[in-house]
Image (cartoon, rainbow, N blue to C red; front, side, top):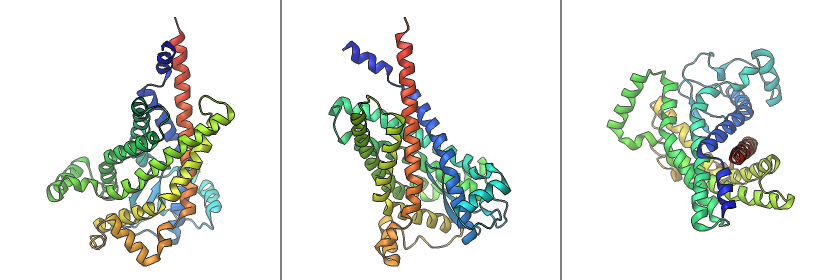
Length: 339
């Protein structure tokens, strides 16, 4: 019993879990953002962005809807350049604009991604521990329940902030103007208007998290058993994260397609004052519209780019997070052994 309480004392605290997830989020963003910067630049070259048009930008942790502010070429995604492909864009951006350009647009999106990731991962661990004490340590439902609830919570908290971020980016509002804009929106459409686009995000992210954590915990347990490790090594966490992220990405792809479709339409209808959303009010209506236009394959569009983004992002995030927790566990153990 004393041994058990000692091992509980060695476990990372909630603050240490938050620090580990924050470090993981920054490292993930630094590795994954260049891929999306190049994708956006190639996209802008093929179909130039006009005022009010939207594009999806990812820092590896979250997808953000970015609305083009103006018609000039000052914005990072409108810089001139003729690229023949991904590798050519990578080389030319570094040569002409400098290596910093590969992380264009990262700071404003990190402001949203860091709190989301900290809430998500910390809540997952806290909920897992609480559920283990009630359902038993080896219950297979724990990762599904903890993953779903923690993702639902983080999406609900950050959804209005993401809406505010997008509005500020498009209209360049001061904080006073933003406050006026939000209060008038709430007065007209009610508080729930701040969660527009929330349902399509939840429908993608909650099933993704349930599938991801269920598979991750299974793969991790199997691999640890095979190598005789008590806790996951960096490589075990990395491999398990990549595999479980890929499975979840493929299964939830139709919801990802619908989410992107709905959110870009939502913002283009707001900024261009068009009536695009009148015939597409729900996620299911958007899904039916995509199937009617492009067939069932339309719901699985962009599977390769999604896998190239999700697999490394999941692998880097979970392996750095597990490494951070392991570091704090050993640190706590040393501190507790001191007389």
